Every structure is written in structure tokens, then in C-alpha cells.
Image (cartoon, rainbow, N blue to C red; front, side):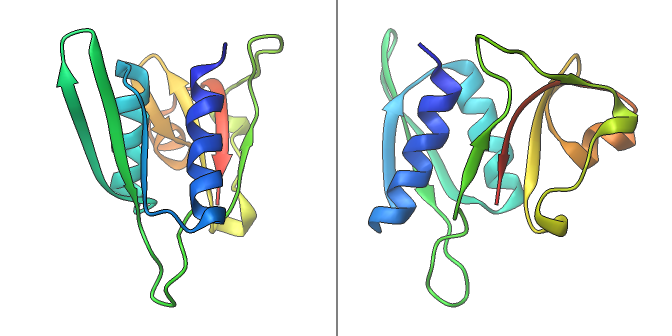
Length: 129
């Protein structure tokens, strides 16, 4: 029902179970979110497998210098039953700057600090740390 919630819970569960590679159904939104997470260092690799309508998105979780995974927890903010929107002046830091908030904006999927710099608001998708 909620593909973004499914994606982030798969990432969280994989890190808790100690699995490095996670596979999920592909969509353009999931692929763009995964690429943004890769750019911030939460994921180390993003691969699309398959052809045409039967594609899967395969992501590899990034590890810390201590050997643990960078993804320790996630929190879905905006859900299909309750959408949450913020302006650029109301975007807050996550976990004292150690985490990130993902926002769907008119300029695409952005992290909170990027949205603040570009002076755009949007739908708060989730927080990750």
C-alpha cells in the first residue's frame, strides 16, 4: 500500500538482521530515494536488475568504521492517511545532525538541508539515522 514505508522498513530490518544486500520491487521514486541515500552515505551501492516491467532494486547498506551499518533506525512521517508538509523555514535537524530528513519537493527528492538551501518546502517523507 505504501511503497516508501516498505522500502525504509526493509532497510531497517536488513540492518538489524545483519544483511548487507536488500532487494525490493523497483519504482522511479524508490530509485531516486536510494540514490539520494547513497549520496549521503547510508547506502554503498544501488543496482537495478531485470527488464521492462519486472525490475528489482538491489541496494547494499553502507557500514561504519566500527563494522556496523549506517542505517540504525527510520521513522515514516508522512503516510497515505496523513500527509505532512513543511515550509523551508520549518525543516529541523534529525538526531542533532547525525541523521537526515527526506523531503519530496517540486525540485525532486531532497534532504532537509538541501531543501533549506534551495528555499523550497514539501512533503516530509521520512527521517533516517
